[in-house]
Image (tube, rainbow, N blue to C red):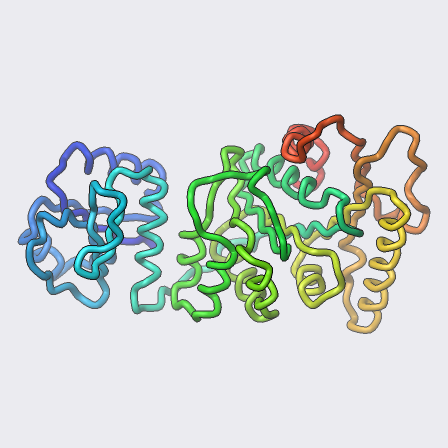
Length: 352
């Protein structure tokens, strides 16, 4: 599927630079036609389908009779303007990557349902969950995402915690959050896959991500059907090699659903007494669920002992067979620095 974009603008230098960027980065996703006057555009659109028209408002002095399958937005040099006479305005001189996301958002607004073709393979989902709170689950999950992305994989980090915070770890352009993602799902958006893609950010480490929920209440409003739709849409249509999911470890439908979806479940344990007790409880609950629901969840679980000092005893024999590895305590004060250091080590290479 290619989005057919028409650009109605007389700034030849700007248009040529924009086309050069889009052709280099999105040649398989966009087809661009350029017009320098309204009449040429109106003549072409009679026989050629244009999904999105980006137009200089100075070249559109009166209303254009567009087909229902075409949506228009104005290109404006003033990035503070949101709309002109009810027509959405996009900033002309913003980064081309952000303009592409706005095009995706516009396309998602069309009153038509796009037929998608499934990718050859569905994304591998790795679910990171803490045996207890404060064991470094988010740090390990982000480090894993960074490591996988460093090898050229397309990786999405998805934080589903009620009070998730990832800004110290990952930063990227955009302002959408998981609250916006949930709203799109609950609104039964016809082009959900494109809408979700338009909200994604990308960090300098090459990791794609969504900012966590804005408020806890939004997270609690997410239902099992909502999360199922989010995972299905992202895993099938967005062509990620890996999706790293980081969520709360308390027993709930959310944890069970993520365990079902995951290719691997990595449980983070810090060796403390509380963490050890809760880890054993998690493993016992999983064994019971496997028996009662005829599942094979336990076989997907691997345990990571985190923040281990040199004199810490070996892993508990009860889960020795489930051990993925042990990460020693790193002498860093900031969690983001720890994540980057682990991300530069070969610790997670066996997951590829």
